[in-house]
Image 1 (cartoon, rainbow, N blue to C red):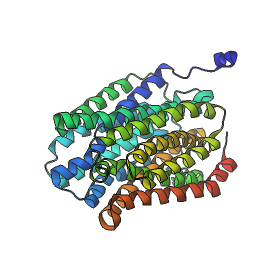
Image 2: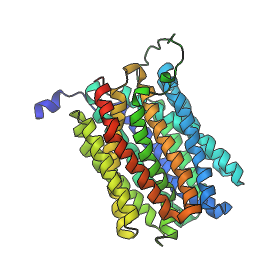
Image 3: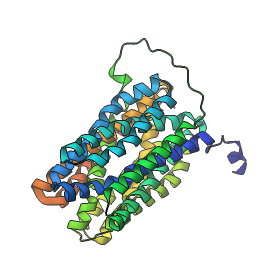
Image 4: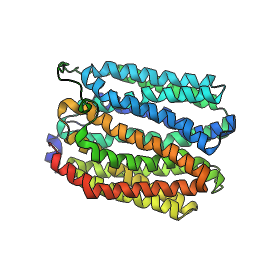
Length: 398
């Protein structure tokens, strides 16, 4: 075993480490304010549940739209330049939240902010894949996801604590801006050999923007993302208004991220052995059980246990699903493969935020919204085992 480990190419090379840290900075800036925005809209503008869902979904919608083209852009232009331009725009948009004097202006700025976020995530993840040796790629993808998992672990908790202590949303927006700028500086120090861009003289087709062979995996990702969109957006208000837990959501996100981190560390070794379909299968089943626990046991015990279990499931599922996309895509379509999985995720999250808010407002409150999240997740799991898993095994290239 020791001899095998010695001949493996280095995983944590300097460029991979820089991309990893910069990705953490970006997601920390995002997660610091994400669970507070529903509270901000409620407290500042008196927005109801449905309006909160509509306003916050705009971020995801624009991220989704831009990701449809991001893979093509990343595959067609120098990736470092694309990454720096997108990352700079993402960081600077946090300054726009200072001037949100009206709900309409906030909605506009938040919606536009989704575009550089969507493009940056595609460019950064593709850059991470580029700087990894092919023998460590599947494993590296799993560890790369730890950067946003750790950000999820500390970001919401720190944001909620700071909100309780200082009571100022502007301070939180400033911290997010600073972390975004630090991440930009780190990415600017990347030293990587740019690929020779070979002009593609073929006519533009849908497959240049979406990895069509991965449509079934995309459906599964969207179903999981729908559930996560409902959960992550409304869990802070749910814990306050339904469970009477003032600071419960901070611990919830901490446990969720802890589960993600543990499962990615365990799953990384399985991915290195090529057990991609197995990891995805285990992950989506475990995650489904977590959502069932959350809705079926509506108390403090179910709330916290579900967070950890959902984290365990998603930590196994997501890197395996990403490896599925990459393994059915030719090398020149890495950016397209990444944009497809991220687009599928955004689509599911966006529909989940809107649908969850509408159900919570008009049908049966947050409990009904979370039951809807479980049902959509269940349908995604059924489809995965009925078709998507077989489709991957049939179409994989490596």
